[in-house]
Length: 225
Image (cartoon, rainbow, N blue to C red; front, top):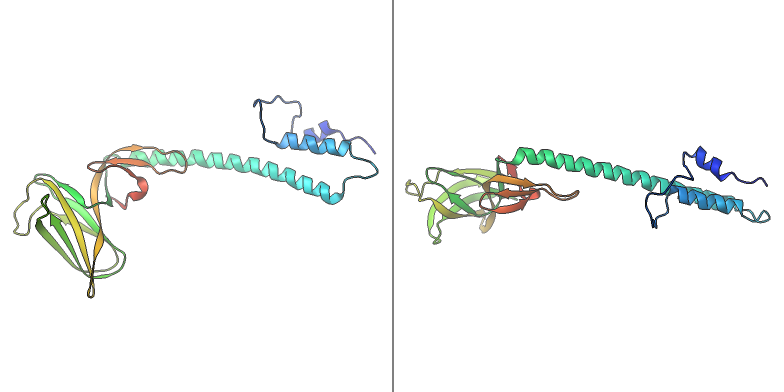
């Protein structure tokens, strides 16, 4: 039986057996270490009881798995870098823009109106939006009538039910959704301006700081105005 030249095998596979190891105390089994163990096993096996073909094929399959995992890790690393770049691109376009996010408290400014929305999971026979002041008093009601499922955009001019402009300050909105004889609360969305964006690590959302609400996740944004 001829001796197996492990150096030649390394050369044929593009591996350098004598290359220095950069990671001291490394506990993981890499391609070079796996191949070294396999060639040593072949070199010192009992000639009267050679390794079965099936065992050899199984070990080669393991070697292929080790190599494949290394390639997969590199692919994931590249994807992570690409994800970070996409986050940075998103962040650069968000600052200064208005977004719709879940909420029910709005800040009315002098001589300005407000943008808001109601999100319906199912069609409604009638939708009412009630606006109350800080004391809980109803100051205005918007009747949207019959509506299909989906998001209903609302532009409120800041006037009360008598047509007079309301004083600047905090107000609360609530949606009543009628479906036949049943009345339920609807999901309300409010508009807020993005003041700054914080990039998240790979696999995490962007964190946006919006006026009047503080920090929210990118996933909470329902619409970019």
